[in-house]
Length: 503
Image (cartoon, rainbow, N blue to C red):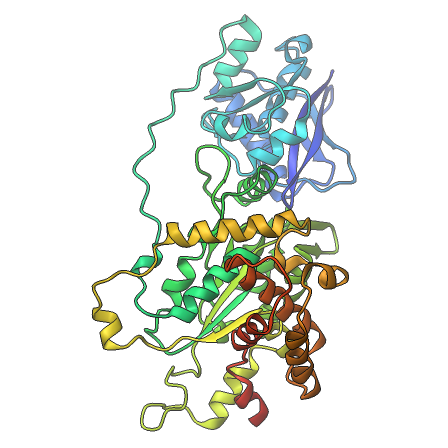
């Protein structure tokens, strides 16, 4: 007999519907899975058999063939276990086929018959379409975010078969535990000194600009970077859904409901290029730059990352997506994030200071070469962060708190939104003359930089965008004057240019 059970699999961060076709017929006993399954799918044979026997059901002593349709698409993961088990039960006449009409099944089976949670519930449930979906107990809060119909959580296979066969009541999910106290958000008021860096953070939050912080250890680079997400507004519904789907597909922990706060990702400098951009397996797992979608990607010790990993960021920084192509599949991940990087001036951190630096000239040159010029050019804001003075460290008056700075950021974003071009960092070049008109003095200042070859064509556009953001933070909506251009130029000085010239 033939049974067809709806289910789904995940490729990248996208769910793909799968029809699990189970055929039980006479012949030598055996179990075959076809339809491009990965190793985890092929191993479902042993899990399903043990789960059925542990649940008081019989295992057919016949030939069983499982086809995962469409057959030309690779399937991965263990989310198909439950659908395969139900297909075997129906095809063996242990359960009438009409009892599973309108249902889709997702979940991994334990050898004891338990239905276990699987990663990627959000894209999986979205893929099954117009069907009531049966999910593992504990996955219902993720499933209801995208389910078009009813979500049915079940604890084990025996309970599910009892409901389908005997018409018993569907089990009710236990009430969610009350949320625990949230840790306090890092506050800008904790930062002592650094007025220029504070301004750069506000501009980054208001305009969506990328930031590079260069300075010795202990200067406060990491503290500054950790406070940028607090200046960003909550995610829009569309971006929140994209971020939630990516985190679900990657198996990352989710809050109760959508991810509404901008994510903050800080991968270690030993991360590989696959860990950063995604891919690596048959299911094409999202990488760190996609997990940072809508939020901040912080690269501490930028000079310690492999050059190939850093150069892999260049295309996503420009386009807001990353396209991962492998021999068997190609996927596109959202990757619209703000890049914040921190870097020491040299391997030892002293920056060549006489009597304090243990690095030779060759070591400093090699260190600088790890960050390519094209990547450096994509940082709109580049500034040196020095250690605060003793008076600043011991000052009792706190600086401007995050909440107050966030209000100014929100007003600047509202001004940019009223122009219809989105964040200032994303203003198209064709719209710059309309959105960022310049005074005569501002144009002259930019011309001088271009004529002395201190500014590239890409840098010209970025300076104008940053200047627009600085003017918005000050509440000025007219033509951008020279002071904002000068300030934008001061915030874009390449602190490693001298060493690069020496190289």
